[in-house]
Length: 208
Image (tube, rainbow, N blue to C red; front, top):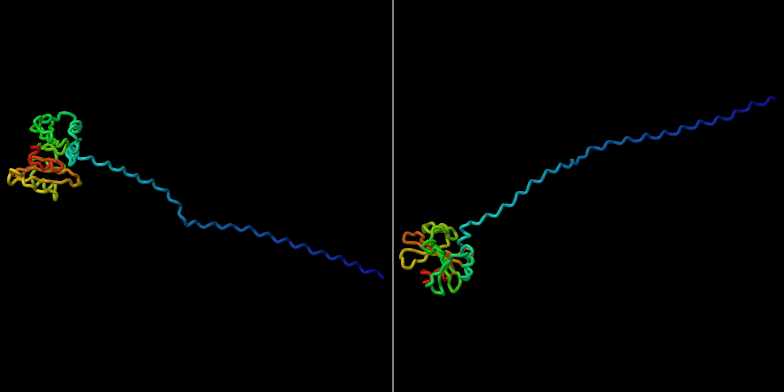
C-alpha cells in the first residue's frame, strides 16, 4: 500500500513589521513676549550750576553797626591807626580819656571822625553826603525817608539846644551792641549821623 504523501511543514508567519517611530513633534513657535523691550535711556538733564553768592553791598561793608571799614569797636587807638593805614590825626589839646582821630584833611574836609574813649574805639561820626549809614540813610535825607528805611525801629529823641528837632535812634536789628543815630534840623533834614556803643553814641557834644 503506497505511503501517504508527507505533510509539508507549516510556513512560519512573516514577522510583523516594527512599528514606525513617531515623527518628532514640531516645536511650537513661542508667542511674542508681552514685556516691552527696555527703552533706550535718555541722557540726564544737565545739573544747573549753583548760583554765585550775591556780592555784598559796598556801602554796607564801609559803615556798619560794629565799626567802619577795617575798624572794629573795642580796638585800641594803636590798632585803629594800624588798620586805617596812615593819616589819622589827634587834636593835641584833647584829653587822654576821650579824643577823636581824624583823617588827614580833618573833619571840615572829610566829615568823618573816630572817637577813642578810655583807650578804645567806641564811636564814629559822619557829616558828609558820601558815606551811607548801615541800612541806607544819608546826610540830606528827610525824616520821612529815614522812617521808611528803618520802619518800626526808630526811637525819636528830642535834640538838645534845638527845640523842635529830633535825633532818630536805631538799634542794630541783628542784636549787636552798636546803635545808629541820625541828627536832624528844624526842617526834618538829616545833618549828620553817628554809630557807636552805649553810652558814647548818646553823647550830644562828643568828647566835650
